Length: 269
Image (cartoon, rainbow, N blue to C red):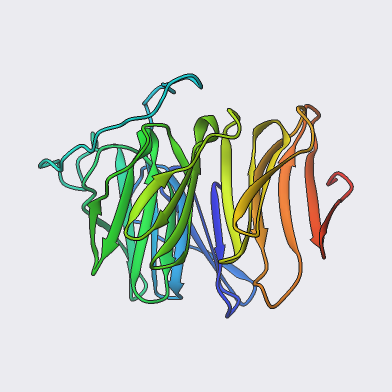
């Protein structure tokens, strides 16, 4: 399983390779046709019958080292193959009233993360700095300030969002455009999550942890021997959160946030 999302009503969706999709409702998991056999990397649901899953086949090597200064130009949209073409690397599928249907992707780059807003729009990010915006069911490419791979996106509101990626890439969406923030690390950043517009967390390689508080991101370093994969936070009116990672040993590591501090759990059996 490469992605998971849960809804307030208790429904859970999980995705993976190749085109694997399962739905959990009331304790029972059911495999669902995703409409594709391509790898699915991320899923986000607006309701139980309206959501998006993204992925594709990634054959793009990691490019641009930490010393490269980003000044990427926007690549105009060009006619591309249909979603059924096996050589199209990008894949987007849409849940419409319980049926997952492939939709047109305006780029060939694989997508790594997707975020949906309650008001009816979605965003996705992927390799070589790809940023896509969905309105009314149609996806369009958006100008990106980076060519580094983007691994995670979160939208706080239609006018406020964050994205993170390789080589410490950190983007902020405000006033209708994405802006590249000054680099604080060369470590790969894997996921960003926001508690509220005023607080959030980023996790990444080599124990890299960022905390957004009082209008700025503060870096916290845990250990070079850790890789932090994922962070999940409860809403601002609750307390708590979870981080999942690993070290050089065989067991995963889990941390639970209670109040202002993170407490490590014992290795899972």
